[in-house]
Image 1: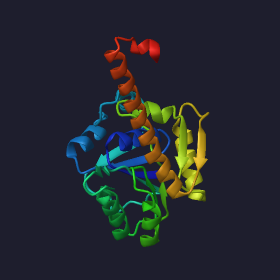
Image 2 (image 1 turned 90 degrees about the horizontal axis):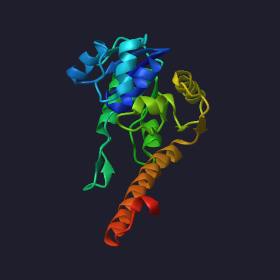
Image 3 (image 1 turned 90 degrees about the vertical axis):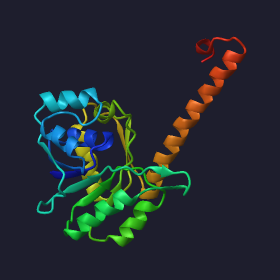
Image 4 (image 1 turned 30 degrees about the horizontal axis):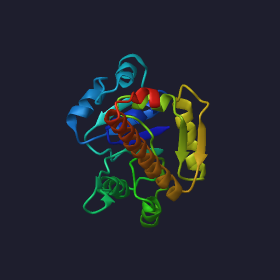
Length: 228
């Protein structure tokens, strides 16, 4: 398979390195420094395993800062930032939309896989507007610093589609993983978007809970570790 990865943050880089062991991967990012690092087999992010894989593994991977217009891809992975704006109470999805617009402009028929965090219902809305490409949302549950480790040994994979292309993409992730015992869950796109947001909320609640527990222990001169 030939795969284009848009965005060399920790999600895009981990996906690119994971898939480049058995596929041809082209990475696109406007940051020349990140592009040069990939092409020189250096990690553009702080991730020990990414550095080791780029240095020691045979990977079919290259990067460019010019949007590839003359290449045909089977899949395009979009992993660009979609930061949440508390003032507007919405995610900034402009980078995702501009990426898809670029693909439309060059007439690409690749299946688009979005791994950026999205508001609920956004993928279905995109699919109505861009009918040339199938658009699949695949939430990521990766941690910064160990994103490749989490990709090689995932706890689960959620695929926001039941289509044949979705199954093919899930097999690409399965082929790249070292531990293949994880569950692959196929859902509708809106449920997949929701699962990502609820997972984030759950993690935030856990942090808040244990912060409160620690504060209580300090106020009562208790050992927080023993309580936990």
